[in-house]
Image (cartoon, rainbow, N blue to C red; front, side):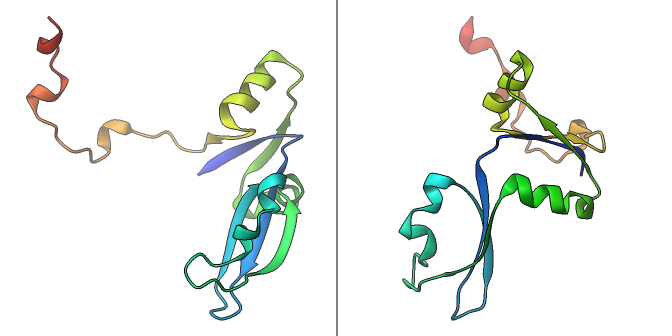
Length: 123
C-alpha cells in the first residue's frame, strides 16, 4: 500500500475508460495524448469490435478527485529542480512511498542452488 503518492504536476497522461458494447466489459487505460489518437486503442484486437469511450480525463485531474478513496496522501512535484527533474525522468512522473516495510528475505524465491551465485567462472 502507498502512504504518499508523488505526481509530477505537468504529467501528460490521460486516464481513458473504454467499454466493449457486446460484452459490457470495461477497461481503464493510461495513455499519452499521442497514444489516445490511435484508432487501434478503440478497437478490440481479436473481434474488431469498436469500443466505446466511457470517459477520458487527464490523470492529474482524476487523481486529485480520487486519491482519498485509496487512503493515501497526494504530493505534487515540479521538474524545475535537479531532484524533481531526476524524479520525472527516472519514474515517469509518478512514484510512491510505501506504507509498510517490505521484508524481502521472507518472500518465496526459487532456490537456484549453491552454484547460482558462484564467482568461480570469473577467476
